Length: 385
Ligand SMILES: Cc1ncc(COP(=O)(O)O)c(C=O)c1O
Image 1: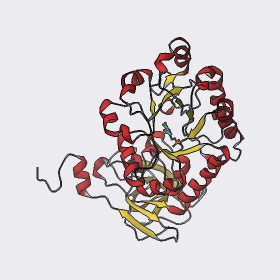
Image 2: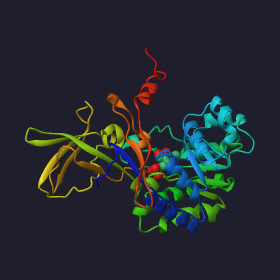
Image 3: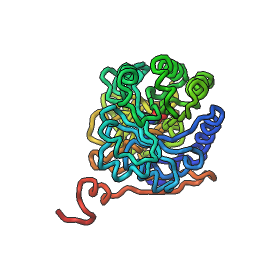
Image 4: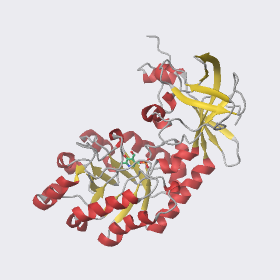
């Protein structure tokens, strides 16, 4: 796709975004559950504004996310917060803005519960100790996990020392990543139901987290069953808080080829983007989808990022037409965990932010600058140090 926009550019497609949120709203309504958006996947204002039209609230993980949601979506937006870091200062600053707060541990609840403003609904995160993710770096149920109270501990406490759960009226769990069917969600719901039924009897709500790609799962029966376990079995209000499912397809990164040369028999194409802009490509070591790549094409390239990191490469791609200096390369499915994790290592600026409007036109919404880079390095605007 050729555009006149300065690259690298992160382009959000508003039409796709709207379709994704609309589809999930329908699923949530069908399941009679509340639908939150998890802004950690993508917290660009265009995404928050679109989300606002469809969601029941936002599942934030930090005060900055909370404030961003508040500024973009307004003070009436329902905000939930859960994260391993919660401090007295955070509660003083943002407590009144919260509707739901989930403690990550019993110790966090013990220290901070008395500081939570009265109207805020408090929950506790549980680690169901049922793993579905093979890479422990992304598995909230890994051994010695820092995320949530192990369910074995919760079972013990709710039986022997229920006072430690005083003031708690919700349960939160989030245990998967990019799930393409809901079998593991249903297994988790059944597991929790079996292990802590008495606790569930005394609660008002449960948050089943995110981690599932709703549009990749044709059969959603297990999802509906999981909701029913809590909603019909225990009379709980059920929340879901997906992120990637809503945004991944709606973002692309467009880059330009700036150098081409042979290295050991392989054509290297150096782009003006980098794994800095797609941190998960490096973290997970996967090859992102590129427009125009064809298996068995004639022209092979190693697409490379522009930093000095040797491993700043995207992989080997094949095209029907040769690349030349100035060719555009478009990375697809970049809308989740890309811009929210992007950084400026090597002093490479962040991509220009653009939206593809519903009529197909492109609009630039933000351009990175040296001043912004300098500010993150602790330098005031125009300061000579
Ligand atoms: C607590 C919590 N909720 C929701 C999400 C969103 O998950 P996803 O973007 O995979 O749907 C995450 C992601 O890490 C999370 O940690």
